[in-house]
Amino acid sequence: MQQRPSDNMFKGTPRLRYFLILSAAVLITG
Image 1 (cartoon, rainbow, N blue to C red):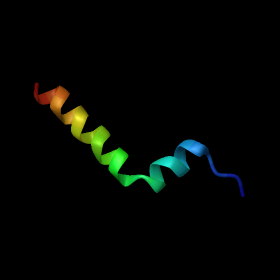
Image 2 (image 1 turned 45 degrees about the horizontal axis):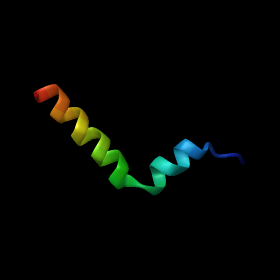
Image 3 (image 1 turned 60 degrees about the horizontal axis):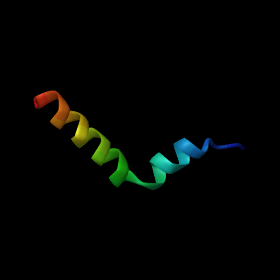
Image 4 (image 1 turned 60 degrees about the vertical axis):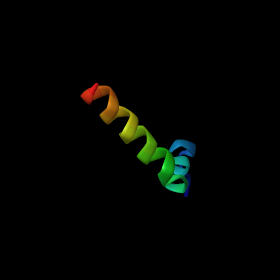
């Protein structure tokens, strides 16, 4: 079973994913 480092990182850090979504929302609204 091989897991991609990027996948593991996103799964291990939900805060980072939330931050990315928040920043994207700010760019769209701004």
